[in-house]
Image 1 (cartoon, rainbow, N blue to C red):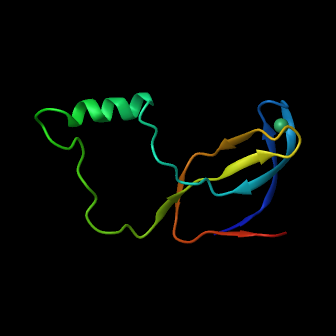
Image 2: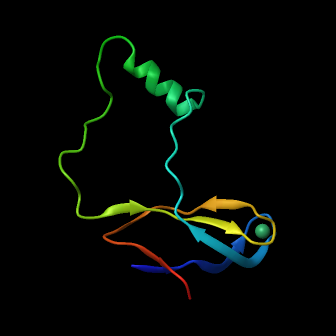
Length: 92
Ligand SMILES: [Zn+2]
């Protein structure tokens, strides 16, 4: 799939359609203070082992999402992920 690097879409904080820069969100290390990570540590502690099954083998598609940054107010949001085999960000 080819995706343009700029997109005109709705900005929640400007409350109108504005130009957005499209980028891939960077993978960050989970913060140990976040609620989900605290629950994960709580489940790991004690008996019962790992809470979920580990994936066996590679899937043919990878889940991708975009980080849209508004060029007017500089706020950013991350879109819902979807599955795609190959992704390219192109200049238009
Ligand atoms: Zn905005």
